[in-house]
Length: 512
Ligand code: XMP
Image (cartoon, rainbow, N blue to C red; front, top):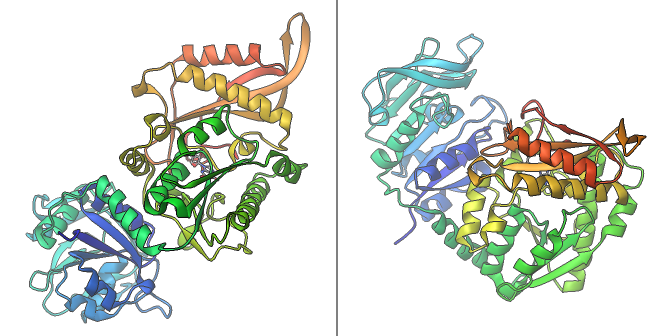
């Protein structure tokens, strides 16, 4: 039977992936396509069971505002328009959109609904999340208004006959109290899908898609040792087997024993090639004297690509670069004009002069917990799947300021001790990420009988669902005490250990 799927037509809104995520959470497969990368014909052929128009930053009347062939509304496929998508639907179907002269509506609003299939099980009054300037001023012929707020007379409209639905607010955002209910009404009530999609299906679908798309091509993948690239490696290895070359670059900024563990798992997988490159020397040379975090990230990112390119040449005709980019990386690297927070080396830090013809990023729609689940389905050992994420630039961004061999040794040992101590805690209370940072602050201490002027190590531990926000972990004092005691005593040069009590935001998880 053909996979039931929903198309999320992306008009550049900030919650697009979240919409897809919510749909997947309801066990329906959702595929995101940018509005200008797909044609009406392709949509028809793909056999989508429903389409969701996402939000977007523009006004439908703007010169460069995203539009789509209006015949999409006549394909007989149910459509749900959200925010800009709602206005676009109104505009396409002959209604009127405008800014009503007001200043827009942002944040929570009281929503009043009338009886409609989309609002089944939703009370007459509830909270919704609004973020818009323009509004639908007049609904198209054949549509009726199904919800309103104080400031927005057309907060929702529908044409039951044509199976077209539109909501000005964001049902995918948690602040919309009954948002999930509305999405599930659309999926099950209107589109009539089953809701039996599972992560296994994602894995199997991805494997066949990758097989199809990469047929006969040689793929090179950079394994960083983190969960994301590991899952991408396992997926691609299953898909293309011997056509995959995994390059594991030991850039000298990995955690203790990490390289051997990676080699153990991937050294022998579905006939793929595994290459371990010892490149510590050249990375450290490039980093000499560099203190600024973004410069460090850029340098490490570029050097990574250089090493890949060399390996690609050595490996033969590899012309596709695979990356374990996941959705939060894309958001944080500033997709669609949102502010760049950090240039993650696997997105924003890519140098312009790359030799690869294509990039494949099979996990880019997934959130972290989904990636772990996919890893499990792929049969990766639990030890690896449940591993904390580890940034591409590695310990390089956990040594504040200039990176040297000595500092790396110190942070590696401290990190190892801290992780050993935290790992003694029961899994339920273990933080999602925990590591040590070597700060650039020197402080006075007493070691043995004498005064010491030494290094300060910071311990960082956070709880998080998706790494977009994180709460600092209230670790048991005993654990912190034990780690601190061991680090200060076992590692020469360390005179002080501090614990980071900042959440994200305003801090980020990593210090650099
Ligand atoms: P931040 O510090 O941005 O980190 O709050 C969020 C999560 O992302 C990890 N991280 C990275 N992962 N490449 C990666 O693949 C990178 O350059 C990178 N920088 C940070 C970080 O460890 C945390 O889990």
